[in-house]
Length: 348
Length: 287
Image (cartoon, rainbow over the protein chains, first blue to last red):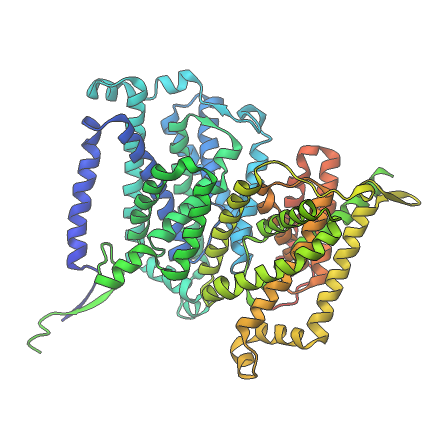
């Protein structure tokens, strides 16, 4: 008897550790300081963005440099819901996902027409067009941006309950709420990506990335797989963008559509950690956060160094830090490689 | 009459965009490499020219003449020591390396040259104009357009009549077979990128004389260059000139209607062409 499995002993342990970490993460606000909660919010949202970019570029072979379009449109849709329709900011996050989904349809339509590497610049153009159009929208502050109205941020559902539960001030309770939502999005995104990669669709995605024509020849509907992955990743990116701006509460087109923050940093996290692996961005975001806290005060020197570090990684360790670890010890925490196990092989 | 003027200005502006695009197109045509740092390299070259004019007190044209060989060497080294190592079947590594280079260049220039706007001063040429009957055109825009035509003409001559051009076409078609014929694809690539940087220097010269520049404006130049290439059709240099002119006209027309729409109009013209002619107006290459 033979069975196909992706499970390894390391992955079983990793699964248990992951569940324990999620449990700790959930109860953390009871004893963690406000600044730790804010740091974790940053780490979790950047991690989610990096996982999503990794999904379309690392697993899907579609190198997008236009992720800022989804973050920005998601954030602006949330602001629109709050300012124009008086929604509560938290449910308005869903509008962000919807808006990013709707934007992803024309973006995919145009960018998929561009062969290979030109796809990257195509996504960038659409992001620019979106930014320029949003900057024309005077109700939402035009080019200079706007803030969430005080009455909207003061009575977000759940904030009062959290404030009473942990005996916090409202502002700190809002951070806790945002942190929990970020945790939920990060865990949900990674679980969904992992499930996708282990499914038939994940196999099809890898086949399309490695060789489009060969994949088609064995019956994979390459176009459908690409659309599916691109639209899902865009929707999730929109949700993350909206959530980030619920916490920030202040928006401008230049910040919400910043190619540096939402694409360069995100690519950097995935590249340093390891492209095409779920473990990569996790390691990458920790490295990035460390560098950010230590050196962000150096401004453009810091960005210069990040750029050079990314180049050096691609030259000397193209599969990133996790790639090095994997090569050295063969560990995969979230394996997607299928292995054939022969039961009772020793007897035979 | 004003619309004729807008049209002519747009076409001449397109010459500048064609200059931005020619280097990008050359590199892509030969090695299928999309250089995301292309726009930042243009700004880098503009600062190089500025540095020469400031230290030696030269006219920008002479300064560009001095900067061009330096930029060639820079491009050659960039290709030889960095980009050649990541070229391959997978398009991800070269894209990420050039994206890293873009971020590094922008911030490096910001540190060295500050965020202040700079300009290359060309003296009386800046405001000189020529009366062509119904319209009056600036000498500088006209010179830009003429240079674009000249650069594209020269590139075509190099491609189709010289040994170097034959090597370019050979490695573009099939690097493995070309190397069997005694061509080293990696050194051909290095020469191509060096040549692209010479064109970048010419583009930077006109950019710097026409308008202000600062370290942050590179990515937008990359987008215009890219749009000109795609509208023209991959592999067609004359198509790139027309692509540049279309973007230029769209921008001047947009600006005429509402100054805030200038850039947006260019992008929208690009999307319309992509919608109706996904392979560009004059496609040549099959890939």
